[in-house]
Length: 339
Image 1 (cartoon, helix red, strand yellow):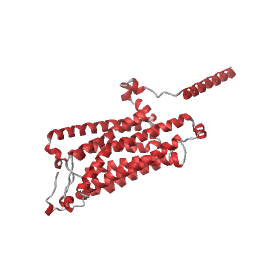
Image 2 (tube, helix red, strand yellow):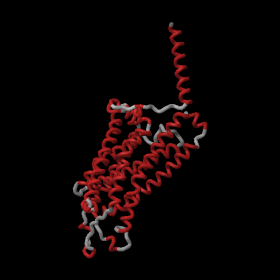
Image 3 (cartoon, rainbow, N blue to C red):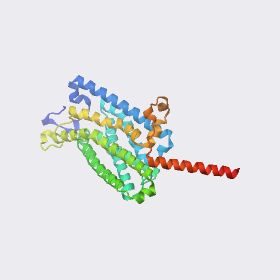
């Protein structure tokens, strides 16, 4: 813990957060373990999200408008894996602000996905294959969101004390509030999906309804994993803020930067979310599962589990069989007419 003499405290003399000003520097074993886990996590983040971005580039189907926000989230996770080692291990700089900005962008992207799905499935009462905006509009939205967050956060790095108060108060509070809102939206979505009447099911088709539910479940898993990974750090950050920067005692507020060992390791747990997301895309989103399995790297070393296609239920199988039979019958009749 780094603090300044209470009688001579001047916020303008504070510096940006640095790992050398944390309790880890007094325990070389914990410091080594922390750096090791950080490097492993960032390597997994970069590798997993590189595969997803490779899939986006290689397969046009993933560049559909309904996956624009997923692409934004994937790019955010990838850059997080690149920036975080620099942010934590390098000397303090504006890079710290970029890392915090990426975390905030992830939160708002998850919120945007939930709002879009809520509007389509609850408000407009249509199926998952549609979106509330065109691909161009969603792309512009992502660009504006990224630029706005960077312009709102990065300049604060020029005022270290205010920046530290910001990341210990506004950042965790915004994550918690947004996650509560997202959970409410998905609760409404699941309720609506479970109440679909038979008329709409017949109009859209059971297969499309089931596929819509599968995609919604995937998005819900992304939200749950984000909350599970980041809530520990958010809670610890708010505890630190309540005891220091937001304390009622003026003497407690006269401190530049402080960090606890739990808060430092909870940050790594938060990073774990960026490494898990690619697995969720692959396991839960059918289009991503198919695209990733078709990549050369997986064709060369594919296992039976990786290449296993989702099983169809009996009704779907019967419908496919009947349609195949009808097509063969039509083909035979055409051949007879030609002959």
